[in-house]
Length: 130
Image 1 (cartoon, one colour):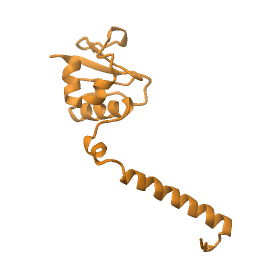
Image 2 (image 1 turned 90 degrees about the vertical axis):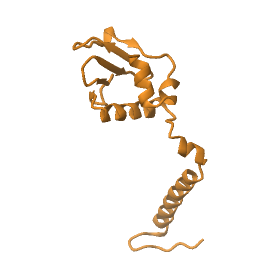
Image 3 (image 1 turned 180 degrees about the vertical axis):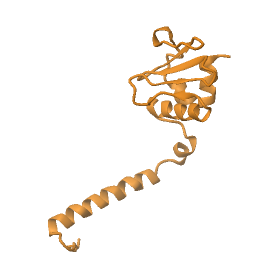
Image 4 (image 1 turned 135 degrees about the vertical axis):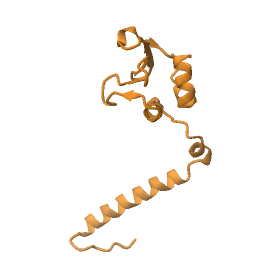
């Protein structure tokens, strides 16, 4: 192995810098070698990824979103009839017209895989059941 001392770097700094570059290259190589099926499916692997995908979808459909940094973020339908509440591992629905309270919300599903395996459009239909 040949190390070139760059301007202002001693041999140790140059070596550590080369290690960092090598680790980054290895990480990207692993991502490139991932099975094509995983890349094509587009299915989120975690509840948080699925929740963010659903929130992005709702925002594109003109739902009013709270701040995503709230302890329990929520999204309200454009007509104000429905509100989806997003807890850490569950989604709740309140259907109260203009007034929504988390205490009145009911769970949409007990299986978090629903959110991961359904498209956002299917999930909203399933949640609201209209």
